[in-house]
Every structure is written in structure tokens, then in C-alpha cells.
Image (cartoon, rainbow, N blue to C red; front, side, top):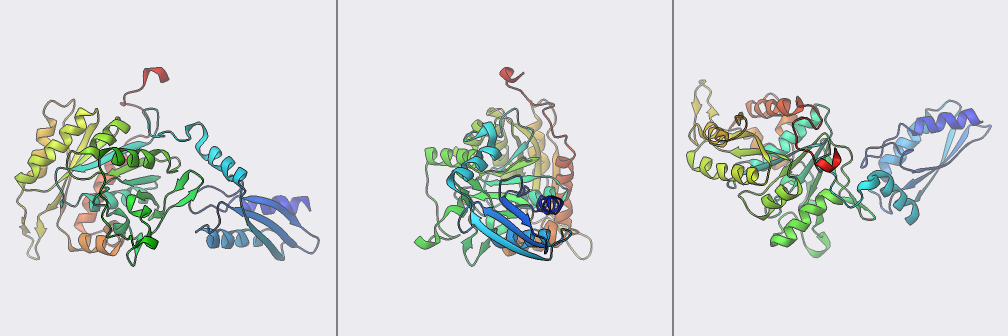
Amino acid sequence: MTEGVDAIRSRLARVIDPEIRRPITDLGMVGDVALDDAGRASVSIKLTIVGCPAAAAIERDVREAVASAPGVTSIDLDVSVMSPAERSALTERLRGSRARTNPFTADSLTRAYAVTSGKGGVGKSTITANLAVALAQRGLRVGLVDADVYGFSIPGILGLVQDGVTQQPTRVDSMILPPIAYDVKTISIGMFLDPSRGQNASTAVAWRGPMLHRTISQFLTDVYFGDLDVLLLDLPPGTGDVAISVGQLLPDADVLVVTTPQPAAADVAVRSGVVARQTGQRVFGVIENMAGLPQPDGSVLELFGAGGGAEVAARLSEGADAPVPLLASVPLSIQLRSGGDAGEPIVVSDPEDPAAVAIRGVADRIAARPRGLAGRSLNPSLV
């Protein structure tokens, strides 16, 4: 029955772990496989941890895969858990030589984008979440770090909060597997709040500089994102500790500056771009949010004024190696706001809404950039 066993293993190679996004055969999750003359298949699989949140999905997919193999009439499935040694081997296999190090350094092919704003309330997190989903819709592998530790909101915007409780990541020894929403791997400080201690999505986090730096560093080193095309970081507003830490940890990241049309917002938005540039990062472009509100008669009501985005782009272009473009003017949209409240990004729920179209246009420009090191500074020791 060797051929039958080989056929079963071939089918099992198509089963993907929902959290790690790799075949379970590559992860050492498949144990003994046998097939007797009566067509009864005996299969052993090993989950990464006790209480694995993907257990039901993996078991279902394994049963379907084995049942599709020729000659199989029934399935005897044994589900167990990896030993500590097997989990250690798994984390080493996934991380390789980069264990406990920042995988997004200068030699990484992942393009990192830090999304910043001069002040709060400009819709930066909503733009970031929708942009991440729009990039994933284009087939890119996308990770999202909610680095806005004080005002974390990304889990809610992506529907990872239910009844005030935020979905938590899975821990495999020292490795953290981020929850996935709309094909975006996401991590946030909100995912580490403890509901058993009364903590929920409304709990305030009051940390100072060293703790903030350590948290962002751990998000980059301990969280297993896998091989990403794009990593987005939603920074807190302003030019404080987190912005400086991200500049130190990801000096080759590009920066997206989010502002609103009024001149007062433009002044502070420029400062956030200047600080990013001082750490060696490059301002990729400006996104103007809350632009004019389209009216039924075709006119546009400019509730927050006009021209702020273009002004920020022009001022950040001064002294730069290349002009900083205004990537998009995202109009005011009730659907964009309500989608964020409901955990349904507008690029999914209403892709033809003018706000969604504008955000998708930014995603198109980012997706068109080649995945590689061209135009980026390299560590001479790596050449």
C-alpha cells in the first residue's frame, strides 16, 4: 500500500496551517500515515500547542484531504500535540538564523512603510488598515503592526474585537503567531490585554519610553510574520518615543504622512515627516484624508478646507532628493467611518465608494514597486 500512503501524504501537503500559512507537512505536523487493504486510513497529526485555535480547521481540512485520496474508504485520525523538542525544532525551522533578531533589516526584501501623522483624529489608523487590506487584495503578503500603543484601534477596524474582547495571538514557545484578518497578519498591544483581569479593548496603556521601545522591538523580533512583501506600521500621532524607536529599528522604512486639508493640520504633519527624515527614513508620499464631501448636486462641501495635503507634500519636497507626491485625497465618507466601527474595511464592503477608490489607488502605487533592494541603502558588510 506504499502508493496509497504516498497519495495520502501528497494530499496532506495541500493542507495549510491557517496561522502560519505553510503546509502542515512542512511544519512537522504529520506523523504516521497508514492505509490497510480495506481502505481504512490511519493518520496522526500534531498540533503546535494545547488549545490551538486552528485545531478544528486543521482537523476538518485533514479529513477532507485524506478522504480525497484514491482507495480511502474511512479515516482514523489521531490528534496530539507537539513535544517541547518538536516545537523548538519548528520555531528554528521557521526563523532559521534570524531567531530573536529583527528580520526587517536593510537586507530584507520586505518593504516597510511607517504611517504617521502630526496629530490625532486625522483617520490615520483607518487609512492604514484599509491600505493593508487593499494590498492583500492584490495578492501581496502583508503584515500590520499597530504601533499606536496608547491609541490602539487596528484590531477593532479589522474586526478582531468581539464583545470588547480582542482576539489574541497564538504563542509557540517564544514565537508569536499574529491573528489574520482579511489576509493581513496583524499584531497590536491590544491583543495582549488579559480579559481575566478585567482588561478589554477600552483598557488604557500607560507606558514610558523604554517600555515602548522594547514593545516595538518585540513586535518585530518575536512575532512570526513569515516572508512579507509589505509591512505597515501604524504609528501614534506626533514625533514622540515610538516614532524615534521605529526610525532606529527600521531606518530603511518609507514613510506615509496622513493629514487633513486644513492648514493647521498641515503644519504639524510636516513635523512628523521631518523627524522621520532625520532618522534616515524617506517620505514616500502624503495622503490627505477627510477631503471634500461630495453632494447630491455634484458640488463638494469642503468641511475642513482645502489644499492641506498638497501643502504638506510641497513643504516636504523642499531639500529632498525627489519630490514628495500627494498620493491621494480621500473624501469624507460615511461608509469609511461606519466600516471602521463595524470591523469591515470599506475596500471590502464598498470598493466603489470614492474613499475606497482613493485608498486602492495608493495600494496600486505601492504594489507596483518592485520587491527588492534597488534604491535602498545597504550595509557595506553585506556586500
